[in-house]
Length: 260
View 1 (cartoon, rainbow, N blue to C red):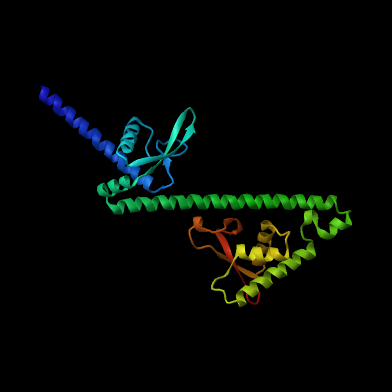
View 2: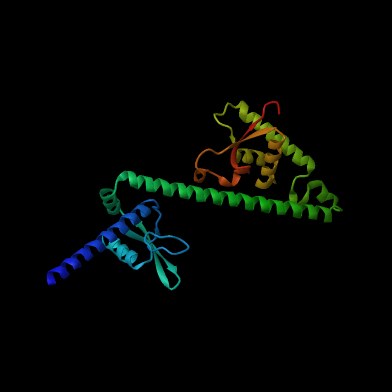
């Protein structure tokens, strides 16, 4: 009777140990994909390295005790303290010793693709917000132009220092001329929008990114220029504020359309 009881206890302890090991290996795989650190214990709003269950807490403590995870910093979380942890070299070695490197790499790639998708969504929303803000500014400028049209000095220079109609036309001609010069320079790629904006702003200091984007859209629709998309990962765009959303693509380069 005593031997049977002891045997059951040993089996139970072995089962718990195996479960804890499984939790640790899965957690180390998640931690490896985010070197900046994750919350040790997850919550509804943001998943962590371990689930906030009794088994997850025990496995998390074991991972720290074994030196597989290190605490990078602590952050307040309501009445508790949230530990932001990252995987250690010992943790990486243990993970690769227990799990196939191919599986670890596949988990890492899936995490990377997920973050890239999230970055793309954020970038799209940022562009939509910028477009909405610029639309509101243009509406406000039209109202101000109607209210202040009696001021001849302001009517000549535009509202709030913005270019008048003649100045806008001059800016468009300058944009096309700069693209022509870029093409004649023998550059190995089409003109990046940040570089085009900086060169154009040297001639028109009052130019904003919103007006620059409006002019690009207009010239694109009138078949004066080509707008070429960014083909790399979204998180690698050097200066995302200059990128332009055209349809379902994010334009980052421009070139003159010959004969346009």
